[in-house]
Amino acid sequence: MGAREESAGSPESSATTRTPAPTVSPLSPDLPVSPGHVAESPGKSLWEQICEEYEAELPVFPEKYKVKREVVMNVSPVADTIFQGMHRGNLFSVPHVSTAPPCPQVKVKTIESQTCSPRDYLETFIFPVLLPGLASLLHQAKTEKCFERKRTKFVACDFLTEWLYNHNPKRIEELFTEFYSIPFVADWLQQHPRPPIPLSLLLTEEEAALIIQSFWRGYLVRCDPEIQELRQWQKKLREDKHIRQRVKMFWAKQEQKVKSKMEEDEADAGNSPPS
Image (cartoon, rainbow, N blue to C red; front, side, top):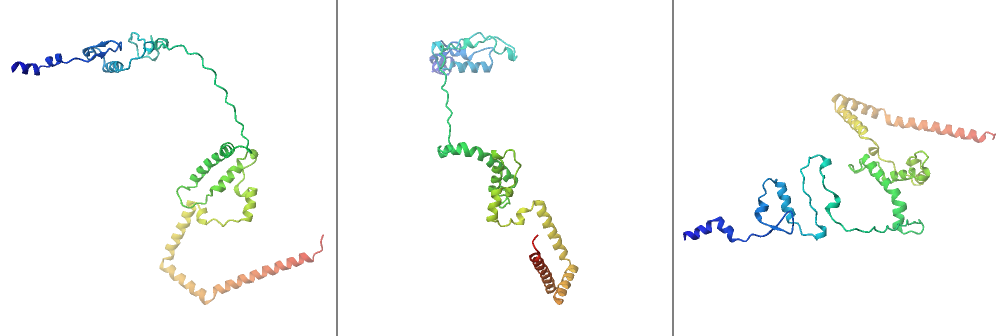
């Protein structure tokens, strides 16, 4: 029993009963070496050991494609001497390859605007002009804060029309023309007038802030008791003396005077002999 326990617990006996697997040599993939040769590498760094183990696991290449190894010399870390002793011709023996025939020249396809397909027409004549305009449109929309507010005064179609009109190759040397000064735009708006843009969209943030602040200051002043008493007295005075009716009568007389004067001028112009 003592002999059996000694043989089972001894690491030397267990090592002798096992058959070690052959290990490929790092210098020559065809020659097997013992495991102790790979594990015991005195004087080698951990990185060198890892590289040797990795190279040992590489597949076996044909004889003519095997790497021709040379003696590795200790070199300085200077960049000019890193690859000293290595030549490109000694790395691989690549068989001679004949010169490849020249590639055939690609013929330039001429596209006619009247006979081409819709896809070719868009890619050749429309998109090269339209895409830069759309890019400028997005930049202007960001400047006008269209991505932050629900309503703005910016009209994308108007901006794109103005951009395309001023970037027309036929108008390169001409001055910049605003949207409402473009001839066909003026004619169209004359026949189809637009409703006025609300003042809230035309004002800038600074102008709107001034209006809101002035209204708030006026509201605080009108809340004063003395101001309220003055406003009530003015209201009673207007009702007692019929101020509103007097103002209406005054403006009616002024309109009548202007109308009669215009009629006299027209009559004098009709009676005057032609020159």
